Amino acid sequence: MCLIVVGWRVHPDYPLVVAANRDEFYRRPTAFAGFWADAPDILGGRDLEAGGTWLGITRAGRFAAVTNVREPGAAPGRHSRGQLTRAFLTGTRSAADYVARIDMAGYAGFNLLVSDGDSLCYASNRGAAPAELVPGIYGLSNHLLDSPWPKLVSARQRATGAIAALPAHAALFSILADDEIVGDDELPATGVPLEWERLLSAIFVRSADYGTRASTVVTVSSTGDIDFEERSFGPAGVPLQSSVMSTAV
Image 1: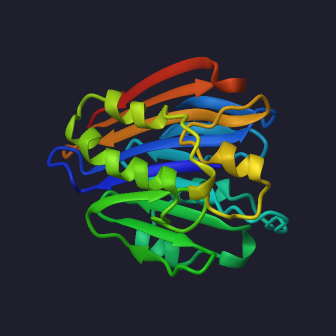
Image 2: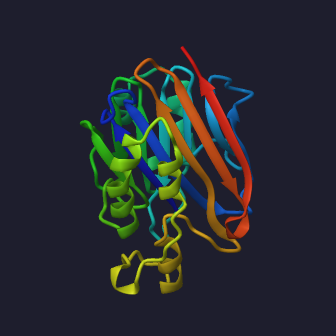
Image 3: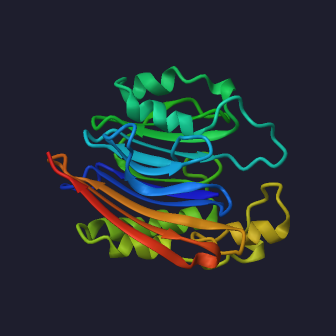
């Protein structure tokens, strides 16, 4: 599945800090992070099956990230969830206006974070009304915002010190690399087989067919400079590529 930790206006020099893992089947075609040829203001990875992205940011600092909701057997939506991020990144509406206008019924279960630089908003079509978020550290996986899943609680707690260590990214990547499996007595019950609950309980997921394919750290400075670093992985967590990109205003 996925995990995202966001620090919103908690560091004096970096109003937006994002650390995220994208978990997916390795067979799904994906492009490594970079500026998009057909939308050169957007920086992020690309889902080559549906054309959207799980996480991206523009040169102007518009940010978007999406996770799915773990609900085995649910029907697919009419639209790919990656289109939610793409539409925000290519658009001009404020974050609050954008989340208020989403066709919630058109998608399978999702969680969405969007920022226009002035505000950070959260939206889901699984029971949580769209909301503008106050300053703080937030965590998102495959249930609602800040759900108390063990890996999410751990990541949020550790993020405080990691954000304080900026501009170095090492502590944030250390969180994202944690592959510890949670004990059975702490596992959430999400409807998948126990073997999958165990596998998905780790922050960094490893297996032969499914796992963490990208770990990404994004920071936006108080002057608008963006630092984007992504590490990509193949089956069993084997490193594939590291990408470091920056923009300056």
